[in-house]
Image 1 (tube, helix red, strand yellow):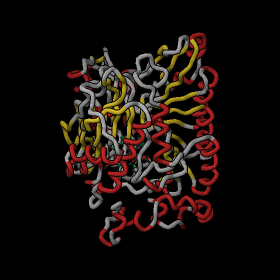
Image 2 (tube, rainbow, N blue to C red):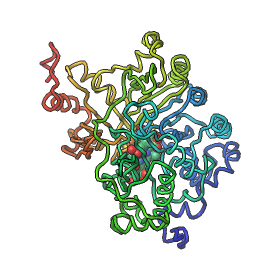
Image 3 (spheres, rainbow, N blue to C red):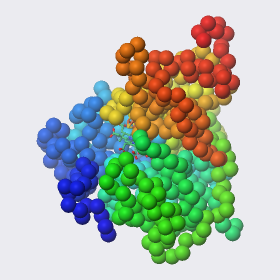
Length: 519
Ligand code: SRM
Ligand code: SF4
């Protein structure tokens, strides 16, 4: 193994040095001490960086109030788990909340370090973990939110996703084999025909494909977004059956990346940079060597043949008499009472299961036909609508400056207020996917949106103001491709008329009566 950590630490960049000096996971044994000493006294490298190996993020914007990023594999959880998380967030009435993330996951906010040991015990008792969810680790593994219940799915991927997570995290205990990757890493496993996982933006993606009449996966590699470069994943020319071969292929690719991935420059360390250096043929050959058996060539065509569904509304499941209901959670923001309420709805109407989507929304599955009428009367449907207005419906936003120190602008609150104003002024015949992201790191994925807005600083009347770069043309589902920047530096205060004009000219929106003067 040729880990960069074997080099003298003086030649390493800041993050490689931090990892070489002490493994991120080592802080696991120090949590009681950290809780005793309080956040201000913790060694800065442990507090600001290594704690992220346990999913605990110091927030310079709100010092002392940490964020905890869970792992919710496949976005599938149950009401008991949701209630545990609600109870944790509820401890912090002033600043506690939870965000559904663009990786089908939850992040808890307001967390105090003195509560972490107890919180981790609660996670464990409820079968949850936040381990290895930040820094140079594999992020939450995504899958179709309707896996196992969708009439049209080709492969139920839930068990596979769990197995891959267990391999990477040592069943949630933490796995030193994968705590020192050159950079973050994303995996998605999709068994559906509509690419609900955004396969193209993952370092490894599995997409359904038939070979000789057998369903399995074609494999894509190297997709990523970063401030300096964004790339769609490319075919590895490999087909794997939907069994442990998927787990072994992930393990092989991760080991190859860990041992050979470029580490000198953090902006050039994602998997695609290694594939560039080697060429995809050599990369494939190394993977084959690692799994110690020949890999089948990719199937000629994949089975991503649908436009992407957003799963909002009510849909019959493949199980007769049962339905899943998709609720819109505006910009993914939940508070403790919302979380308790979702847990209650899942128990009263379904079987307790709750699912999260990469669009930052919630599904409750397994609701019998006979219970639907009663569900429609629940007051929470006013807040989390199943038939939201056309822009709110597809709105996605990253965290932004409220909590994220990389942010160049405020995102979530602004994004929601703006689409609500536009919906008040326009008749919009179909949903338009608008994604906001607070900086070029692209956590809000503006490149997959029809209208993407990336935070920037710009000048207006001689002053520096919050602005956005406008992205257009992101296509999801079948024939997915990334959008690109079409206009730079629009001051946020001037954005509404720009979007209104775009919606009218390119998305068939019409001004509502009485507001024509506003154009
Ligand atoms: Fe992200 C860093 C939030 C999905 C690309 N991302 C961050 C940090 C951790 C920065 C920080 O320490 O403050 C943000 C935490 C802010 C906070 O307090 O919430 C952050 N990223 C998010 C989330 C919460 C956005 C959201 O509101 O949903 C998403 C969490 C997903 C999860 O559950 O794990 C999130 N981040 C993404 C995605 C989208 C995706 O995975 O589909 C991307 C682009 C795809 C990719 O990674 O290739 C993304 N985040 C980044 C990057 C740029 C990575 C790079 O290679 O340069 C950074 C910065 C970094 O890693 O240095 C970053
Ligand atoms: Fe923070 Fe930038 Fe990611 Fe938004 S895109 S969460 S502002 S790092």
